[in-house]
Amino acid sequence: MKALILVDLQNDFCQGGALEVKEGNMVIPIANQLMEQFDLVVATQDWHPANHGSFAANLMWSKPGQIVELDGLQQMLWPIHCVQDSFGALFVKDLNTEKITKVFPKGTDPKIDSYSGFFDNGHRKSTGLSEYLKDKGVKEVYVLGLATDYCVKFTTLDAITEGFKTYLVEDACRGVNIQEDDSKNAIKAMEEAGASIIHSSDILTAV
Ligand code: VGL
Ligand code: ZN
Image 1 (tube, helix red, strand yellow):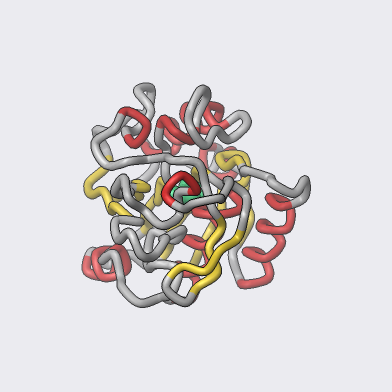
Image 2 (cartoon, rainbow, N blue to C red):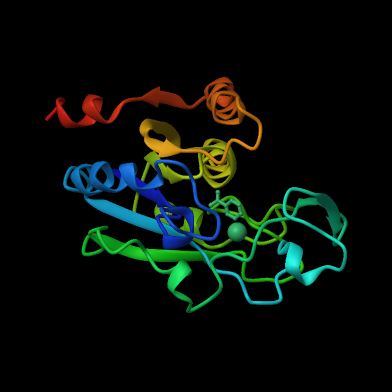
């Protein structure tokens, strides 16, 4: 059984969003097309309370891009984004959400961030995604979404360590690229960890 994991296809990561990822919207039509090839589609949703510790605005004298310590972990500070129930946290309007069987919110604890859809950044708590997929008999997962160098990367790495055969659909991802090569390096790290890097056409033409 194969599952498609849609990572953070939310307004704040797309055009005009608070944490806009360049060309983020371009992955939406690919996601819509790919969904048709899967029996199981799940989505992660960055879902922060307004007082989240990753927001620079919640910390005096700080700016997005700075690194601070949050509950014992290194934390990159971000602009306010994906606040629970806000427009920015909603899935992009053009995304076909009909095939999504379950949404996994993450980043809900103000004291810890969660880039991965499986665990928080300290691997302290599970979101339930791994258990859900295993319960459904999933052995292979295909990952796509935003952003390549953060949530896609850590979701993919956790999928591998959770024992799933893991595919990264490279053309259906875009990155933040605070440093120019961040996405490129993230893809390399995922590949080295055991992910198969594929193109959406590999899935679409195989059927
Ligand atoms: C993300 C930074 C902060 C992501 C989420 O979805 O990649 N990046 N929160
Ligand atoms: Zn976030």
